[in-house]
Image (cartoon, rainbow, N blue to C red):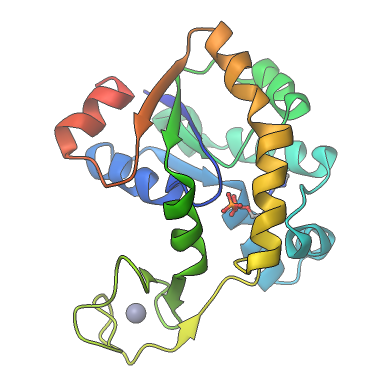
Length: 212
Ligand code: ADP
Ligand code: ZN
């Protein structure tokens, strides 16, 4: 059973790498704090409404809210049984220290990607309104223009509201200031595996990185 943290700036491909991990470990639980917030926002839950203003600005949702949300998720049976990939958590020292009291971590995987690619990944990203499949206007267009590869419907573009130039600038700043220092924290614990994720990795490499 693996307990992994994915680490890297916005646009590094944490979501994509998580699906690559799930290809080799289908039962591992992918926990993306950003996805959980977005789901709550869509359903207009109190948690979602609380998170909205922060997400719109590209700022961190307050720690008490975020940490409790992760604690609850980590306490579920599927996680206990099959392990997890944390994607987007922890994002500052307070969160990392809270996590260290909840779980032992096997590995922290740091995804490195050049800044110009990060910017294109984020500003070019859109998804299919019907099935949520993600595309990119620079790197990953659907095979048939305007038709979704996955569900076959005519693609109606959906962009994340925080994938704008202004919000991205703030998200990158928050990463530099609050999140990046955590790399040292985990390097001191000898947990960090660093990879270049400019491109998807072959399966053999994925296995090696996660240690199976
Ligand atoms: P990114 O592409 O910036 O990594 P995410 O989908 O991980 O985007 O997160 C989107 C937003 O959700 C963040 O900008 C932040 O407002 C909020 N968020 C996600 N994870 C956390 C966290 N661990 N702590 C605080 N806020 C978070
Ligand atoms: Zn689709």
